[in-house]
Image (cartoon, rainbow, N blue to C red; front, side, top):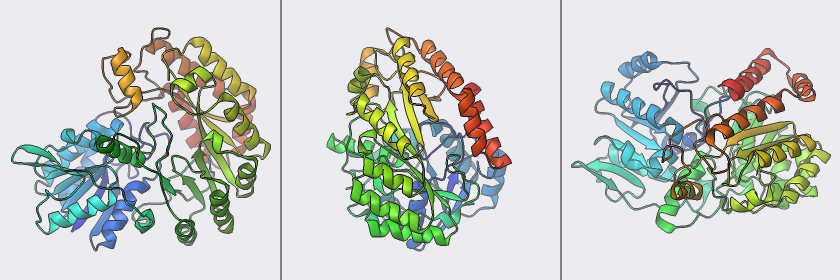
Amino acid sequence: MKITFVVPPVLDKSKPTERSSGCTYMLYPMVNIFELSVAALLEQNKHEVKYIDCIEKNWRKNNLESFLENDNSETYCIWSVNLGIQNDLLGQQLIRHIRSSSYVIFMGPAPTFNPNKFVVDDFTFVVRGEPEITAKELINALENKIALEQIKGISFKKENTIINNSNRDLIENIDEIPFPARHLINKNYYHNPKLHVSPYTAVITSRNCPYKCIYCVPTSLSFARELEFKKFNDKKPPVSKRSINNILAEFKLLHEQGYKGISFMDDNFIWGEERTRKICEGLIQYNFVWGCQTRADSITENIAKVLSKSNCQYVDLGIESFDQKILDYIQKGLTVKQAEDAIILLKKHNVPVKLNILLGAAPFETKETIKATYQKIKQLKIDQVMFSLATPFPGTEFYKLCKQNGWLVNGDYAPTDIQKKAVVNYPHISNKELERAIFYNNLKFFTQPYLIKKHLKNISSKKDFKVAAIAIKRKLVG
């Protein structure tokens, strides 16, 4: 079967959606290895696969229309997240208008949570949760005209009724999933300004994490996996980890393909000192520049040393707040002291630290708690911070609490820019006050003279400067 993965252009007058993390608009172009893993498995099964990133090509609606008019794909796949729902449904309508008999398959967290919203006709399907095996079976069934009722993990329409088949068991051995089909993309388009090398790619060595933060929307793959698993099991899915040998084999391939930088997309990259050491040895072997996201309580002296030795250019820590009462409320499972100790250890070994801070994560957030967190960031001399507004995504415990207590501004969740618009309204701080707080936090932080000087020293090209300027502009004014 001929299959095309499509990242639609902006069709709803919003902004390009970032689809790997899945909860923000795009600050810089990130490769979505999750759908490329599905593409690789389909290629392995002898299907003919293409990948069209309309954002990368700077395509508008008319460009996609022209492509579809001259294309002969039998199936189009779209990876959808909350911020992209309306845009992606417009993409489906466009495909259906021009390619009336082609199949459209949605996957990702948005269609997993609400498949009925996406299954709009008899030729449109949803692959729920962990997508690889389900997508393979669905496409084989469509190609061979096999009944769909026995394929686990899909939703489809039959005789004007939407059918949600039972869930699929998680993939037992994720080593069996082929490496993402990166040959389908323009590798020189995607970049991470924290790495300062090109080309770069994303890698994932594990799926999900065992922690119970009430607000958490992990990577879009993990969120889809978690939403589907919770629906049938009422608990989080177990963590799946790739073997060290499998990870090192991917490093070797990436080196051969000319990649120089890696961003690890694991919800939590560090799973003990021994595993981390072996992965870092592989990174040293191929001279990769890299970064990751992990929990603060996973940072030890030995971990900090091995990160430094292996040329780690950033560790992304989800601290959220330096107020212990807030951390306890959001079930972070972390103390303020653990957060501070991790930052101090990383800085001691010259590993750059990036913090994620959530404003409005608890009903007792106030202007004073926000100010105290900012002062702690200043005191610790943090060089990179992403301030976000706590947003109750459907499927999270935070959403349930906001809904029950009437904290949602318009009574329910609506997709929004989590770095600009607050959708919660608390007794002690309003949504407008939260929006002002994030604006002024960004303004104060990014205009610090020492920080401007430091970041300017790291800019080595006009491209780096342009990327940095665009990112700052989007943070401050959109």
